[in-house]
Amino acid sequence: MPEISRFFGIIIRMYWEMNMRHHAPHFHAYYQDSVAVFSIEPVELLAGELPRRQIRLVEAWAELH
Image (tube, rainbow, N blue to C red):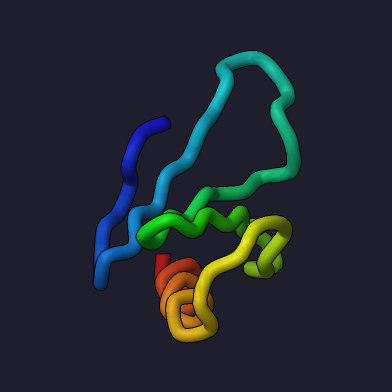
């Protein structure tokens, strides 16, 4: 999965399949041993877990980008 951003120990990755339907548009956030999946529009946690502070940082990052 290509890495698209890295900040405060959080890694954001996105996967895509050309000409194929994957799932609703989303990205994956990794922090230490935790993994979470966030939807793009609206930005919200779909699956997994991160510490609350990291969830807020990921949501703020997504709103800016």
